[in-house]
Length: 315
Image 1 (cartoon, rainbow, N blue to C red):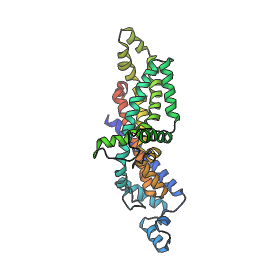
Image 2 (cartoon, one colour):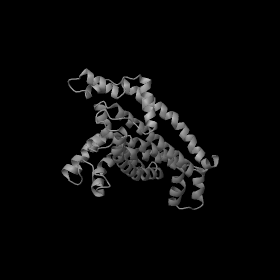
Image 3 (cartoon, rainbow, N blue to C red):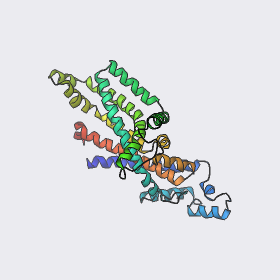
């Protein structure tokens, strides 16, 4: 297993290098100059020159890139051009918020999508299967921003059950934190649950047609044992892969959802950084998101091996 993990990490290194080149290069192609915005309305030439020297913007592009990558390797993602705070500190403030939202959305999506996919596969071409597919298609089709606004109007404004916006740390007030996060988590979970439902259904149908499932039924095993112990366990691999990718996507920040519910997470930080042309923050966010995707893929690969004896035998 350690050798397998080491090989996967070796693959991740060139991937991150390529991503860093794209992130840095494309950022430089964006229109606008953040230094002009920082210099104020008067835009004194001496001030502009001082800021360019301070942030090494007069250096050659390759020098700027190598300096940025070298800083990342030692945990220095640069300094925000807008707030003068270290980028890693800003990310550290916002990341726990997005992690909480992502975990809650993922839990809701799995609680809804996986059982629905199992039932749809077991009752294939029956009423329950059709209903599950219609609901899944609706979850994929309805825009998150529209669903979020409708929930705020119904649940918060008309019924007064939950707060419409805001955020409270789960470590400060767990009850209020759950109240403020349950609606945005549900909004994010709808599309995820739909994808999980469809993949679970497809994986289950593939396993249900296998010879060993017919053998298990012929031995007199109960339908519950056949479905949960034999079919679902062998259908887990594609579900794990999708779940890891979806969770990595959530860690990238749900921009629209966080904006609608005024949640101070990755999404809001990204929007603010883009509008203020805070290049260092945008680059740091994208790199952290890429690292999150790679970590989630590594976790999925490890779970593959742990759940599939045939893969363990090849290591």
